[in-house]
Length: 419
Ligand code: UD1
Image (cartoon, rainbow, N blue to C red):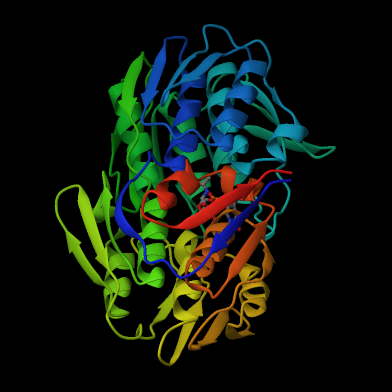
């Protein structure tokens, strides 16, 4: 397994182009299952999660290819409605094929994804919502077996909590259901809005994107589409933290700052300068110490859980104590013991990390436990004294395109140690 070595001490200086959003790509690619027409999606990041999803599509009979940031998908015929355990357990967003397969084919058998490092992550909201749309759902040997032989029918679904994935599943399924579907307490994340925009281009009738009530009028069929994926707000936020922690000055290109307003406000509160223009964000670290902040992660437009680990890393070096509370997942502090190995002083009390800022971090061997934790450890390594070696970087490769090259271009001393 590859590792990444970072030698700390060089402030990042330069420009970083933000890639297309990995999470949005995973949300939108399954639209190909809703139509027999061609789907072309651009600004797709070259990351392993995208390839995993294409592999899954291929075994459903989809003609799927990826070249230079563009995926071409065409499900002229769906030859297999089973999404197997070996793929879904590797990447839980594969579960999102359930809604479109069921809507188009009237049946689907999709492996339950299981828990992962950050929590139990059940799929009950997806399943309850599909039942409201008339699906018959059974669980058998770790698989969801969903049937709607006469098609889905619109209904009113009230989500107990905001769920990005369940909103995605139900939004896609409802586009081909008979009549109107209303999703109450829907997710407002940019990924959901971009999915909705793409579906509208395909002929879907959707209102209320970006609000917590989405209304969908089912249509008979959807047509071909060409759509550009929005920039990756989590990647942008991660490099903003990397710039700030390293004491650097970095301009993020092709970023959409409207998607990370809350994050940028908190970053400013740390004393980091944030200058925004239409598609650029300049991040300049403060001359003195970073200031502590108290944050709770929330559904959009709140502070994103996917930028929690990175902010914990940043606050390890603040002048004072910060409290960062995880409001979405139950077990998302796996990076804390690793940061402690680098000299960070952090107590975890329930859902909160109490971070007592220290004067310096020291390089160490650390292990990444999930995608966002990996980039948190690399950021910490950029400032730590000496070498930090991050293992299990396959997590990083799931979602960050050309991370080493992007950081190197800004002066970082970073290299991949091939196994
Ligand atoms: C997506 C993102 C992930 C992000 C998360 C929250 C992708 C590929 N993943 O994950 O990066 O961290 O949104 O912004 O885009 N829940 C249930 N039952 C359900 C569904 C969810 O209890 O049926 C709970 C989850 O356990 C969690 C919370 O709801 O505590 C939110 O999860 P959800 O928004 O569904 O996350 P994902 O869509 O899996």
